[in-house]
Length: 295
Image (tube, rainbow, N blue to C red; front, top):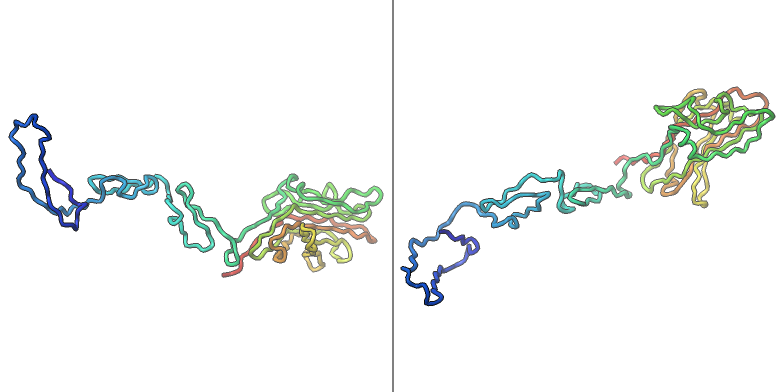
């Protein structure tokens, strides 16, 4: 028989055999013999007496103690973690955590941590999206003049989504109401991020009088806090392309960081001699994006 003395390694020990009959009964046998007592060193590695010696958790690091050796098995969960330390991705801009044995990396934005994103987008995919915008008409139509206002239209659009915001009549043929046309189109509230360089872009098709004194069209950024003044960030100019889709881009929103804002498009027909011959104005694919500075 063999006895494992591993727990006494490095120590001086004595081997003591003890025999006791316990009482006077059943003592008619020959007795006990002890011979060939030896202490030997076994080079075989003995790692464990039980699974508790192996550090296995049976999920991220499963295994067994077999023949006094720890044998690891394949984990049951892919990319498994036992603690947040297992999830360190080396990115100073992420907060790393381990939840239910899965790693999570939460981006924490700050002055030196920026993540590009589109934080507002209006593609006018249908009338339901357009109806989220507020239309206010302040024009004075002439006698028998058609109703011209901001409305949803699928006669012109940019990209794959059939629809745009349109200023004109119901048929999409004219913006002449035989009087003075004046109407605003205001977006839902937009929350501007705290960090990064914010820029606004949109596409516009202008089939109106290019003269700046007639048919004025502009865009205001309107903070909703009631304190910060609104600001005009775009205005129609005769140098622009008319009768075709044009992208207006690079409008800075950096002065509105951390604010809630609305976008307000305004068209003012400014009545003058002559009859307008264009079909009106279309707006599509409005995007507010955060652009990170080059590192």
